[in-house]
Image (tube, rainbow, N blue to C red):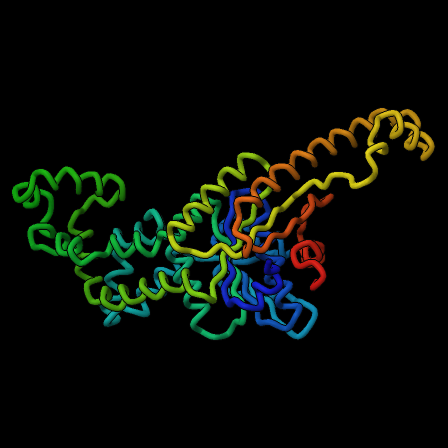
Length: 371
């Protein structure tokens, strides 16, 4: 079985996925930090606007501009939070055939809605940003902190969704003369499709149908470059140098979501390389007799437990019950994983991890003897 350390050495892109609240952001930050401390030029990218990555790294501020995180060793650690609107604007600027077309698109109200609210737009731009970072050659390792599980699946499907949206056959509808002429003309031409596009206007809040048509007309010159870009994005997600790491906690509901995620990534032909069980309660490994209530009470009393003895023993036994449940669910989940999938277990720490020193506490559990 491979280790997480070996996976980092063999891949240039690590994508961390998982449910919300399982410590995915902390894991992504800890992985990038580990690589940086061993000489790599590492980048951790998040598309979570809730500032969890900034909190995990102990940064006061972080936005669409790259932040440098001080680390020991010869490597570097950079952190970046996706600026969805800024990333779309940058994409248009790169591919627009002229400044006039660029300005026209950026000012278009339909484009402004698309770049901020279109389903899958955020996920696609995250991958687009990932490709930019990958192709610039400045980083040995890029770690991506994705949104919670369902959105992580959106993340995988985003390139195809955008490609479908910009399909030439669809675009042809929007650039027809009667379309840009407005609703009155359009209803005369096609009453059935009129209902569909009326809903489009209601969903986007763009009242003038002509603006939709103008957007596609202006974008026409960008589509050929954009289609090729979508293909490269799609290929990067499935490339040999890209590894998916699933982060889970031992709760039953989280593991059910994780099983669904595993099935979906197989169907999407994406290779899952590692699973990190986070916030695990570890069962006491002592002799069976030590766990008997009477014996525990005697031990705690001798240690000065006094009036708190009964409460301490009760709390310990409940913790043991939680730990046994964690161990059983983890064992069942592991049996369904391929043997080649690396597995790491990180304990439930006594405090949240809010800085580099806190993230370093995860390393011995994530990377074992290599840390």
